[in-house]
Structure formats: C-alpha cells, structure tokens
View: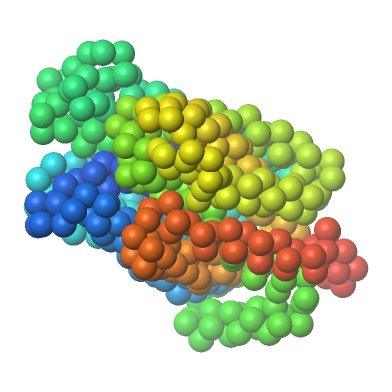
Length: 463
C-alpha cells in the first residue's frame, strides 16, 4: 500500500511527465517550427512574407480554438462521471495513451508542408487528451492535502513539472533541435544521424515527448491510489447529468465561485494564448530560429519553476487570491511590451538597425511570463479547491476546465482576427490585455477563502 508521501510524489510525477507537451509542443519547439513550415508553405503559394506569417498564426489559432471547445464541452461530463464512479486513474490512462500516440506522430511534419493540416489536427487531438488527463489529476489534489498545506503542495507540484520542462528543453536544444546551419546549440549535428536538411532533429520533438511521457508517467501509476469514496461502479448518464445540473445551480447562487470561474476563464484564456503564440511571435516578428526560441524557453521555464515554488509559499502564507491578482498585473505589463515591440521600435521609441534591445527585452519578458504564469496556474488550482465540494472534486475541476476552455476560442480567435485585420503579428495581441483586465475586475468579488467556511459549517458529514 502506497504511503501518503509516495502518493504525493506520484501525483507530482504526472506534472513532470505531462509538462513537455506544453513546453516543447505548444510553446517552444513544435509551434514555432509549425509556424515556419506554414509560412514557407503559404509563401510558396504566392503570399508575401508578412501575409504568410499572419496566415500561419491564424491557422494555429484555429486549431487552438477548436481544441478548446472540445475540452470545454467534455470536461464537466468526464469529471462528473469520474466522481460518480470513483475511478480517476482509468481516465488518466486512456488520455495519456492518446497523447503519447499523437505526439509521436508529429515527426511527420516535413519542411515542405505537405502534411501541414494533418499534423495540426494530430497535435491538437493530443493536446485535448493531455489537458483532459491534467484536469482529472488536478482533482486528486484535495485528497492529498488540507487547507493549511494545499497552496504549497500545488505550487511544489507545478514547479516540479516546470523543472521537467526545463530538462526536456535542454536535451532538445543540446542534442536534437538544429538551427539554420544544421547544428544544435553546442555546435554538433543532431544525434542518431538525424538529417538537419530534412529538419529531423527538430521533428524528433514529437517522438521525444512521447517517450518522455510514457517513461515518467510510470511512478504516477505505481503510487497513485483512488480515494475509495465513490459510489457507483457504473454510473448512469442520468445520474451524471443530474449532478451536473445541481452543480450548475450552485454556481448561480454562489457569487464568489461564479466570479472566480468567470474571471479565471478570461485571464487563463489570455495566458494560454500568450504561451501558445509566444514562440510564433518570436519566429515571425523577431526572426528567431529554433535554437534562440529554445534558449528563450529555458529561461522562461527556469523562472517558472522557481517563481511557481515561491508563489506556492506565498499562497500558503497569504492565500491564493493575492498571488493571482499580482500575477495578472504583471502579465498585463508584459503584454503591453509585446504589443509595443518590433525590430524597428519599442513602445514607440525608434531603435537602431540591428539593435539587440528587442531580443534582450523579449528574453526578460519570457522570464517574467514564465514566473507569473506558473504562479497564477498554481494559485488558481488552490482557489478552485477552496471552492469545490468535498465530495465532488473531479466535477469541480471539470467545471474549472469548462470555464477555462469555454472561451478558449476567444483569445486565439481575437488574435487571429486582429492579426488579419491589422496585418500585424504584434498588434494581434491587443485583445489579450483586455482579457487580463476584465479577469482582474471580476476577482474583486471572489472570497479569499472560497467556500471552505461554508463546507466546514454545513457539510461535516461529507468527509
């Protein structure tokens, strides 16, 4: 029988295993490579460079939009079913297998762009599976901690995952991903005889993610245990639907929960958009190659690992709400800089030709973005636990995923729309600032302790 310490470590190993899909796939290796391939493909079809870049970004935003809608529709139902059956591990196993298969298939995105659409679909199917597994894993957090320790545990788990992202990114940059000269960060050809001309080093990111996920998910399944509190081995659809309707009615009457779900829906949507488009922005606006973007990613991931851990400590001492509010304001400032920066100017100030200021500033933005984003993710997870019914954590996190993805189409769609309308990649980020500010406004109505006081007073029999 696994001890509590082993169960906690097993839970944390999930973050380590799953993180490279986001770090390497969504942000720093695959997405900029996809953008470069897509832009080259559209230029071959006759578009000018800037228009081809805008088209590439719009295509990526379409995939993110549709995947967000799928997660939003499915997450509450999956969470309610997991709560009713008491079985979370089988769901995580199935979603993990799908994520591994899809990530391995990303090898097939060749530089000529002939598989462009197919690989776009495969990536986002894997992303849906990976995020769905993460939602169920988050719902296991309340059984591993109490109100006093939950903030620190959430922050430590997220920080541990970011360190996994750092290590995986280091390995890719040092030994596999090649630059335009066909060599890795240490100046050697990609390992295993991979052909730099066919971008096989960079394309290996897909199989690398798959192997990493499959290997490091093993401790999770070795040490994780169901909480043993459920209820129906084979819940009916009617029962699951009734539970969801009851939860929906509770949200309508609980102002703090409703405000948190709406506010987090907007600021998480904005944050995910910045993560997803950060590498693409660097490739299309600053002209960075994969190696430069990867170094940027290392800096951002290290900052995320350190500051997420610090945020977890502050969460434990002061509660999650101040951490979320402060992080949102930091992200607003970073977004303003991103919108106002190009090779030619910074916030309206002209720059000399060949100036390194945009590169330096963007590296700094990456570090701040990684740190603030990690802290806000961890603290939001804690805040959701404080608002969740003790008997229905997976359903609560399914609802959290719903609101996190219900408007997941909004930021990518607005970025795509603004990019297309204004013909500028950086001005396409303007809607992100509005989403952060609106989320901050709604946080004013969120109680610092969530609904824990209510559960403690009225539902002692729930445990």
